[in-house]
Image 1: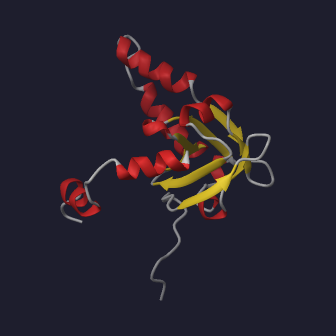
Image 2 (image 1 turned 60 degrees about the horizontal axis):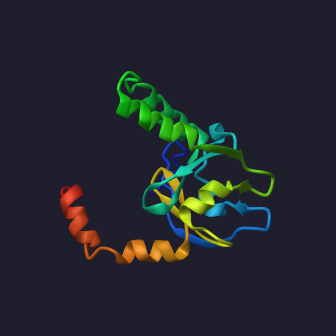
Length: 157
């Protein structure tokens, strides 16, 4: 009897991992996160500035779905056009090398305030890169508990 069948079509990146960026600006993606990157992603990741000064990282297959949603925005609307430009102009693509390393652009490292040490966090359908101190500040910035958030956003779970 299989209690938890493996489903490759569901992505749920989770956990946190403290790593170092090498002298060339490369980072090795942890094996526990790599296992959720689907083969159709072709080892390609898309990185862009995220909220709270992190870097959002999406596998190619998930990024394509997001781009399709952006394509539905009306380009005649100045705010929608600005959003499309903010996302497309600041997104960087990289393919993992045989050691599963990616090169993080300097502009994104500056955005997140990341030096040689980096915190990698699974965040549902994406991976996030954080300055470890900024990550701690983020978690300490609110008194709201997991229980109260669950009650507010997922009352029936």
